[in-house]
Length: 269
Image: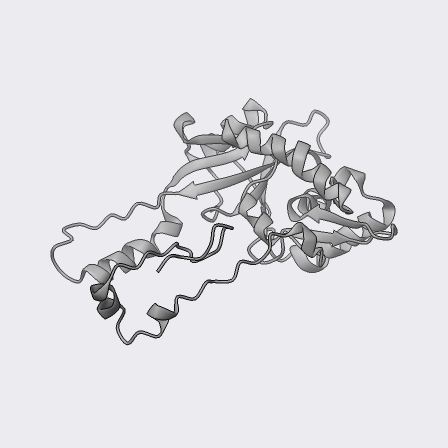
Protein backbone atom coordinates (compact mmCIF):
# COMPACT_ATOMS: atom_id res chain seq x y z
CA UNK A 1 0.00 0.00 0.00
CA UNK A 2 2.81 2.43 0.88
CA UNK A 3 4.45 1.83 -2.51
CA UNK A 4 1.19 2.68 -4.25
CA UNK A 5 0.79 5.85 -2.17
CA UNK A 6 4.34 6.89 -3.06
CA UNK A 7 3.54 6.48 -6.77
CA UNK A 8 0.48 8.71 -6.36
CA UNK A 9 2.54 11.34 -4.52
CA UNK A 10 5.14 11.23 -7.29
CA UNK A 11 2.49 11.86 -9.95
CA UNK A 12 0.23 14.30 -8.11
CA UNK A 13 2.69 16.19 -5.91
CA UNK A 14 6.30 15.92 -6.96
CA UNK A 15 5.90 16.27 -10.75
CA UNK A 16 3.56 19.31 -10.57
CA UNK A 17 5.84 21.07 -8.04
CA UNK A 18 8.88 20.49 -10.23
CA UNK A 19 6.96 21.83 -13.23
CA UNK A 20 6.09 25.01 -11.32
CA UNK A 21 9.82 25.56 -10.92
CA UNK A 22 10.69 25.00 -14.57
CA UNK A 23 11.70 21.32 -14.36
CA UNK A 24 9.74 18.80 -16.41
CA UNK A 25 10.12 15.02 -16.29
CA UNK A 26 8.84 13.93 -19.69
CA UNK A 27 7.34 10.66 -20.80
CA UNK A 28 9.14 9.13 -23.78
CA UNK A 29 5.81 9.33 -25.64
CA UNK A 30 6.02 13.14 -25.55
CA UNK A 31 9.44 13.70 -27.11
CA UNK A 32 9.70 16.02 -30.08
CA UNK A 33 11.67 15.17 -33.23
CA UNK A 34 14.90 16.76 -31.98
CA UNK A 35 14.65 14.94 -28.66
CA UNK A 36 13.93 11.61 -30.35
CA UNK A 37 17.13 11.95 -32.37
CA UNK A 38 19.01 12.95 -29.22
CA UNK A 39 17.75 9.94 -27.23
CA UNK A 40 18.52 7.47 -30.04
CA UNK A 41 22.05 8.87 -30.31
CA UNK A 42 22.43 8.76 -26.52
CA UNK A 43 21.27 5.13 -26.53
CA UNK A 44 23.73 4.09 -29.24
CA UNK A 45 26.69 5.92 -27.74
CA UNK A 46 26.12 5.37 -24.02
CA UNK A 47 23.57 2.65 -23.30
CA UNK A 48 24.16 0.02 -25.96
CA UNK A 49 27.22 -1.56 -24.27
CA UNK A 50 25.29 -2.16 -21.04
CA UNK A 51 21.69 -3.15 -21.85
CA UNK A 52 22.47 -6.91 -22.23
CA UNK A 53 19.39 -7.99 -24.26
CA UNK A 54 18.18 -11.58 -23.76
CA UNK A 55 15.21 -13.35 -25.37
CA UNK A 56 13.59 -15.57 -22.72
CA UNK A 57 12.64 -19.19 -23.34
CA UNK A 58 10.98 -20.37 -20.11
CA UNK A 59 13.57 -22.29 -18.07
CA UNK A 60 15.77 -23.06 -21.10
CA UNK A 61 17.21 -19.55 -21.11
CA UNK A 62 17.45 -18.09 -17.62
CA UNK A 63 19.43 -14.84 -17.56
CA UNK A 64 21.20 -13.89 -14.36
CA UNK A 65 19.80 -10.64 -13.02
CA UNK A 66 22.06 -8.70 -10.68
CA UNK A 67 20.80 -8.23 -7.16
CA UNK A 68 18.82 -4.99 -6.86
CA UNK A 69 19.58 -3.86 -10.43
CA UNK A 70 16.93 -2.37 -12.72
CA UNK A 71 15.66 -4.21 -15.78
CA UNK A 72 12.93 -3.87 -18.39
CA UNK A 73 10.83 -6.88 -19.25
CA UNK A 74 9.62 -6.66 -22.87
CA UNK A 75 6.52 -8.18 -24.44
CA UNK A 76 7.28 -8.88 -28.11
CA UNK A 77 5.72 -10.17 -31.33
CA UNK A 78 7.88 -11.37 -34.20
CA UNK A 79 7.40 -9.44 -37.47
CA UNK A 80 8.13 -12.55 -39.56
CA UNK A 81 5.17 -14.64 -38.38
CA UNK A 82 1.66 -14.48 -39.85
CA UNK A 83 0.07 -15.28 -36.49
CA UNK A 84 2.61 -14.06 -33.93
CA UNK A 85 2.65 -15.44 -30.41
CA UNK A 86 3.85 -13.64 -27.32
CA UNK A 87 7.58 -13.63 -26.74
CA UNK A 88 9.47 -12.04 -23.87
CA UNK A 89 12.85 -10.42 -23.37
CA UNK A 90 14.93 -8.73 -20.68
CA UNK A 91 17.18 -5.68 -21.03
CA UNK A 92 19.15 -3.91 -18.32
CA UNK A 93 18.68 -0.30 -17.28
CA UNK A 94 22.32 0.63 -16.59
CA UNK A 95 21.75 3.01 -13.68
CA UNK A 96 24.89 1.58 -12.07
CA UNK A 97 26.94 3.11 -14.91
CA UNK A 98 24.99 6.25 -15.84
CA UNK A 99 22.85 8.89 -14.19
CA UNK A 100 19.21 7.94 -13.81
CA UNK A 101 18.28 11.35 -15.23
CA UNK A 102 18.98 12.38 -18.83
CA UNK A 103 18.76 16.10 -19.60
CA UNK A 104 17.07 16.69 -22.95
CA UNK A 105 17.62 19.51 -25.43
CA UNK A 106 14.91 22.12 -24.89
CA UNK A 107 14.12 25.25 -26.90
CA UNK A 108 12.08 26.90 -24.14
CA UNK A 109 14.11 29.42 -22.14
CA UNK A 110 14.22 28.74 -18.43
CA UNK A 111 12.82 25.21 -18.80
CA UNK A 112 14.76 22.04 -17.99
CA UNK A 113 13.41 18.80 -19.41
CA UNK A 114 14.44 15.42 -18.00
CA UNK A 115 13.92 11.89 -19.28
CA UNK A 116 14.30 8.99 -16.88
CA UNK A 117 17.04 6.60 -17.95
CA UNK A 118 14.40 3.85 -17.81
CA UNK A 119 12.37 5.67 -20.46
CA UNK A 120 15.43 6.31 -22.62
CA UNK A 121 15.85 2.53 -22.78
CA UNK A 122 12.11 2.04 -23.41
CA UNK A 123 12.18 4.47 -26.29
CA UNK A 124 15.27 3.19 -28.12
CA UNK A 125 15.25 -0.52 -27.28
CA UNK A 126 13.52 -1.10 -30.64
CA UNK A 127 16.93 -0.49 -32.23
CA UNK A 128 18.27 -3.79 -30.85
CA UNK A 129 15.13 -5.80 -31.63
CA UNK A 130 14.63 -4.94 -35.34
CA UNK A 131 12.77 -8.19 -36.06
CA UNK A 132 10.13 -7.60 -33.40
CA UNK A 133 7.22 -5.35 -32.58
CA UNK A 134 7.55 -4.28 -28.95
CA UNK A 135 4.06 -4.33 -27.48
CA UNK A 136 4.95 -3.04 -24.05
CA UNK A 137 7.65 -2.90 -21.39
CA UNK A 138 7.58 -3.19 -17.61
CA UNK A 139 10.24 -2.41 -15.03
CA UNK A 140 11.37 -5.21 -12.71
CA UNK A 141 13.96 -5.73 -9.99
CA UNK A 142 15.13 -9.02 -8.54
CA UNK A 143 16.32 -9.32 -4.95
CA UNK A 144 18.57 -12.22 -4.04
CA UNK A 145 18.91 -14.13 -0.79
CA UNK A 146 21.13 -12.04 1.49
CA UNK A 147 21.14 -14.32 4.53
CA UNK A 148 24.51 -15.13 6.05
CA UNK A 149 24.91 -18.86 6.47
CA UNK A 150 27.85 -19.53 8.80
CA UNK A 151 28.14 -23.08 10.10
CA UNK A 152 29.62 -23.47 13.56
CA UNK A 153 30.62 -19.85 14.10
CA UNK A 154 32.54 -20.75 17.22
CA UNK A 155 35.31 -22.60 15.37
CA UNK A 156 37.91 -21.41 12.85
CA UNK A 157 38.36 -17.87 11.53
CA UNK A 158 34.97 -16.15 11.98
CA UNK A 159 36.02 -13.05 10.00
CA UNK A 160 37.06 -15.19 7.02
CA UNK A 161 33.74 -17.04 7.19
CA UNK A 162 31.78 -13.78 7.20
CA UNK A 163 33.75 -12.44 4.22
CA UNK A 164 33.15 -15.65 2.30
CA UNK A 165 29.44 -15.58 3.10
CA UNK A 166 29.11 -11.90 2.14
CA UNK A 167 30.74 -12.58 -1.22
CA UNK A 168 27.89 -14.97 -2.04
CA UNK A 169 25.09 -12.52 -1.29
CA UNK A 170 25.05 -11.10 -4.83
CA UNK A 171 24.63 -14.55 -6.37
CA UNK A 172 22.13 -16.02 -3.91
CA UNK A 173 18.80 -17.52 -4.87
CA UNK A 174 16.10 -15.17 -6.13
CA UNK A 175 13.94 -14.25 -3.14
CA UNK A 176 11.78 -11.33 -4.32
CA UNK A 177 10.54 -9.88 -7.60
CA UNK A 178 9.59 -6.21 -7.61
CA UNK A 179 7.50 -5.42 -10.68
CA UNK A 180 5.32 -2.79 -12.31
CA UNK A 181 1.81 -3.51 -11.03
CA UNK A 182 0.34 -2.86 -14.50
CA UNK A 183 2.11 -5.94 -15.86
CA UNK A 184 -0.48 -8.41 -17.27
CA UNK A 185 -0.93 -11.71 -15.46
CA UNK A 186 0.36 -13.85 -18.34
CA UNK A 187 3.65 -11.94 -18.36
CA UNK A 188 4.05 -12.03 -14.59
CA UNK A 189 3.35 -15.77 -14.55
CA UNK A 190 5.99 -16.29 -17.25
CA UNK A 191 8.61 -14.40 -15.24
CA UNK A 192 7.74 -16.34 -12.11
CA UNK A 193 8.48 -19.56 -13.99
CA UNK A 194 11.73 -18.25 -15.44
CA UNK A 195 13.13 -17.03 -12.12
CA UNK A 196 11.42 -19.65 -9.94
CA UNK A 197 9.56 -17.07 -7.88
CA UNK A 198 6.54 -17.93 -5.74
CA UNK A 199 3.49 -15.67 -5.21
CA UNK A 200 4.79 -14.91 -1.71
CA UNK A 201 7.92 -13.41 -3.28
CA UNK A 202 6.09 -10.85 -5.42
CA UNK A 203 6.07 -7.12 -4.64
CA UNK A 204 4.00 -4.89 -6.95
CA UNK A 205 5.21 -1.29 -7.25
CA UNK A 206 4.91 1.61 -9.69
CA UNK A 207 6.53 2.31 -13.02
CA UNK A 208 9.92 3.15 -11.49
CA UNK A 209 11.96 1.35 -8.82
CA UNK A 210 15.10 2.26 -6.80
CA UNK A 211 13.63 5.67 -6.05
CA UNK A 212 16.54 6.45 -3.72
CA UNK A 213 18.23 7.60 -6.95
CA UNK A 214 16.17 10.79 -6.62
CA UNK A 215 18.63 11.88 -3.92
CA UNK A 216 20.95 12.48 -6.89
CA UNK A 217 18.41 14.41 -8.94
CA UNK A 218 20.14 17.32 -10.75
CA UNK A 219 19.73 20.61 -8.87
CA UNK A 220 20.28 22.99 -11.84
CA UNK A 221 21.69 25.43 -9.25
CA UNK A 222 18.19 26.07 -7.89
CA UNK A 223 19.40 26.44 -4.33
CA UNK A 224 16.00 27.56 -3.04
CA UNK A 225 14.52 24.13 -3.78
CA UNK A 226 17.00 22.29 -1.57
CA UNK A 227 17.07 21.98 2.19
CA UNK A 228 19.73 24.25 3.71
CA UNK A 229 22.92 22.50 4.72
CA UNK A 230 23.08 22.08 8.49
CA UNK A 231 26.70 22.41 9.63
CA UNK A 232 27.81 20.16 12.50
CA UNK A 233 27.84 21.87 15.87
CA UNK A 234 31.22 21.63 17.53
CA UNK A 235 31.39 20.53 21.14
CA UNK A 236 34.72 22.08 22.06
CA UNK A 237 34.78 20.50 25.50
CA UNK A 238 34.96 17.07 23.82
CA UNK A 239 36.95 17.99 20.73
CA UNK A 240 39.75 19.58 22.76
CA UNK A 241 39.84 16.78 25.31
CA UNK A 242 42.81 14.41 25.43
CA UNK A 243 40.42 11.66 26.46
CA UNK A 244 36.63 11.78 25.96
CA UNK A 245 36.29 9.15 28.66
CA UNK A 246 38.08 11.36 31.20
CA UNK A 247 35.63 14.19 30.42
CA UNK A 248 32.54 12.07 30.92
CA UNK A 249 34.00 10.75 34.17
CA UNK A 250 33.98 14.35 35.43
CA UNK A 251 30.33 15.02 34.47
CA UNK A 252 27.54 13.91 32.17
CA UNK A 253 27.46 15.54 28.75
CA UNK A 254 24.17 15.67 26.86
CA UNK A 255 24.47 15.69 23.07
CA UNK A 256 21.95 15.74 20.24
CA UNK A 257 23.02 13.41 17.39
CA UNK A 258 23.61 14.13 14.61
CA UNK A 259 24.78 17.36 16.26
CA UNK A 260 22.56 19.63 14.18
CA UNK A 261 20.45 22.61 15.24
CA UNK A 262 16.73 22.11 14.68
CA UNK A 263 15.81 25.57 15.86
CA UNK A 264 15.74 24.69 19.54
CA UNK A 265 19.25 25.74 20.53
CA UNK A 266 22.60 24.05 20.75
CA UNK A 267 23.41 20.78 22.48
CA UNK A 268 23.43 21.16 26.23
CA UNK A 269 26.82 20.54 27.84
